[in-house]
Image (tube, rainbow, N blue to C red; front, side, top):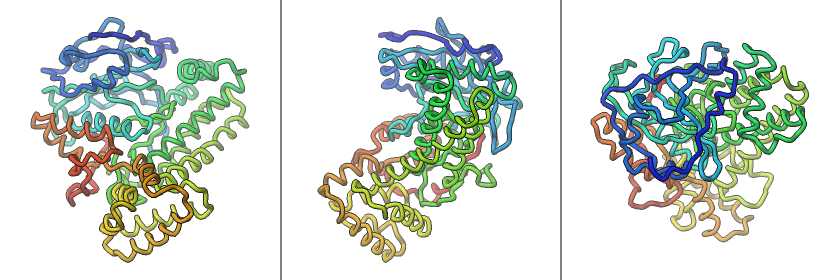
Length: 484
């Protein structure tokens, strides 16, 4: 490590010891540093001139001075059913650092080996899942959506049994906090009101400091409203880019509204409102079109956990902020994607009819909105070519052009703004699958090349057009399971 410009803390250890267990990582065999996020490291306040210096930390064989690894304890609702046995089953919180800009970062080693909360698991992460999380967290960051980040990953030779024998890997994931809704559920259901209050004060002091000086009742109610609103806005942002999380259990919900725990996710290809990205989600609980409702249900689970320390009226009032915040953000997102800056009461109808049309005619979600962003300069052709029945496109385009007559911005100004919200490049599952296959053969250059593209998803990058191509038939609706 060189150019060190951060401060070390471990404030999570100030919580009651029921919230964690100290665990030493289980070292991986013959580890190799395969990807290091230098830009993120600089934001965090350090440089890694020699990436290999960090291999031991990623492999669990080395701890830096000040690291005190703990497995966090929490509970949560999984597919709607409360599970008291949850916690970090394969991850360890190593320490917290404060960067030069004052921002706090948790360092979390994912794939560190067994913990008391592993249940029947082996505590390991496999190469494909580690690559998928690295790719998607950085893709979401590039899209401007709140998310955990990927600092670096290592591969190893250890065999790991999933559906087949795979190789192990580990990821150092960073975030402002790893505290989840499930921490509050654990406190409320197993520890008692004083512990809920302790956790509340901890979260507010570190992550909502603007609320610290308010009276207790107002501090708690304002905090809950903010958590609900952040959650709603993040999910509205998911919907706008066609992102399906896949496992929206309450223990996968960040208390600060980050996108958290990437497993069987997907970005929509052909638009399907009921798309299910997790093939183990037989009932479609976490389908694309159900994500907004599930976000609200998770806020209700959090609300229930807060009732021992908050007035019920305050909790209900906070919950009502979800629908308001979601609807406002979703409508604004879609108006921006369509280039509609002048308010019109018919816009919501146009938006919903657009979704219905894309669903009925299996139109590629990302390509459709990107083509609209160049409608004046490229003409109707790129939009029409996404439809089997061109007449459907023609009817919709006629309606859209009529709506644009109410706009006052010049075409090029409007479309410049549209290109800043309609990505040309998203992490389609087939792209992830291609780089995983190359990595399994020892070649990580395709992964690094894809990451470069995803850093600037809204830019044209004509030299990278191939990454924006529609997926081949084999690449649509790939089966992704929780074991990823």
